[in-house]
Length: 163
Length: 152
View: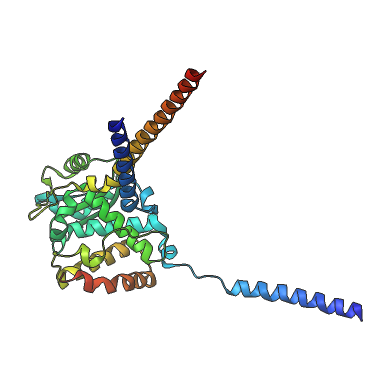
């Protein structure tokens, strides 16, 4: 019985802590939440492709799913933002089909200290805390209900015994 | 006498209704910068263009390398920029990111890089033919942030 009591209170404390954590880390609703997701990529142009930079930019802007594009002659980079329905490899393949193989996707080097925890995990933390809070809260509620049900049965048995 | 009083009362009532109605017309609230910019979808189009300009800009893109390499961080940057412009221009958004000083801590952004960033933003606004008045109003909101961004 003591073990059950400890488990019940532990779950209750975990539920309170999780829901408290969710409340403090949650992000208020914003119109940006409803915007379609996009990704960004940069493509390095060389040779003939570099000469066709501006034309390629104009062409890319006509493709469905591309939300913005820019060509910077100084960096020889064609940069695009696109909806999640379009993949980076699809854009690269279409660019190569249009201007030849002298196009590479630019991979930015990330030197220096990096956060060991993925940004996506940090961003999803409020959601995880809410789920954990509801889970532990639910279990606490169930054990409380079970306890009251058990107490009721015990009482009835006692009355029957007296009769 | 009673009729005269009734008549005067009716005239006064009509006058009150007419004058308050006129006053309401004069008190039309001017549209906010957010409304003049075209709302959140127009702001997101400008921000997308701004980010692609920055990623391609050799003066500043090294500062965005880590963010550009991580799709999730890039998305977060985009949403924070939209929220910041939306909230600053009187829209219904709330900026949920770090303050400017904290966000740029350790980045050692130079005056040249800041000017390049402003140039990229102006180019994005020009691409969508944002009128000069709206451009000036928006830059006036973002301008005071310079001291919190440069040299941190």
